[in-house]
Length: 261
Image (cartoon, rainbow, N blue to C red; front, side, top):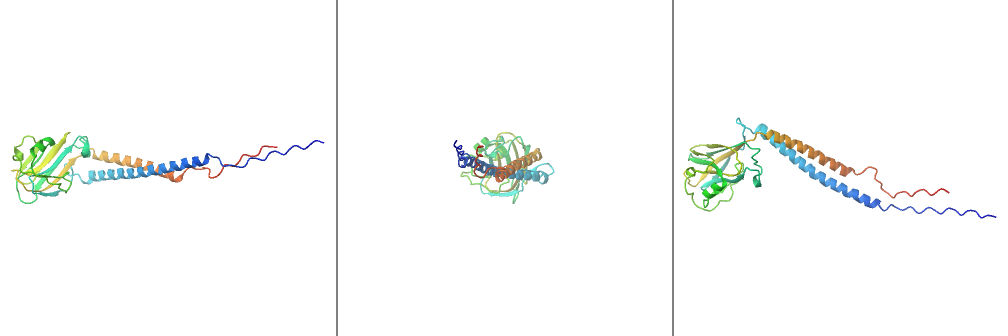
């Protein structure tokens, strides 16, 4: 009598695939990177949109009849011999990169006595010439005429002579009452100097600066478009990071079916 065939071996126990956990970890790291990058891009996009909106506002509301975007007038009162804005670089390099020669056309600077009618001097010259002329002269500096803060006063004495007698000025104006100069922007480092016409101490003036920026509207449009694109990219990354992958396995992989008998 023949023996019955032995029963088939039992299927192996179900085990979790070892690659599932590392795969989930990689997906989690990718989501974190997407969230961080998306957040940074959103912040950058908001900043670009804000800058573009500010440029549009300045172009539409702050231009005068001559086409200059002008700051408000500010008072500057110093007991020194000179009030200066020194070393502005119109080559678009260094700390004054906000003043690129390729964007600005002309500058217009106005000063007027705050009280009295003492003759004033206003001039622009190469920074190196101004530094030599005012070496050892007690003076005060501002970053620009849109800033109301007068910097620390340098020690020293009076200038070697009245400013109007110097021959290095690129453009200048002197006399009683309000003074104004218009200067076609040139590449290089330049300084603006306000003094009493006779070189005496004690300066109390109101000053403002205006600039003709023919491409301001196009610059503002470029900032708005760039801001919108960057903001959209950041929002997309945030959405992908928060959403996560679809249909990702969340448990052990089911075992294969047992072989047929």
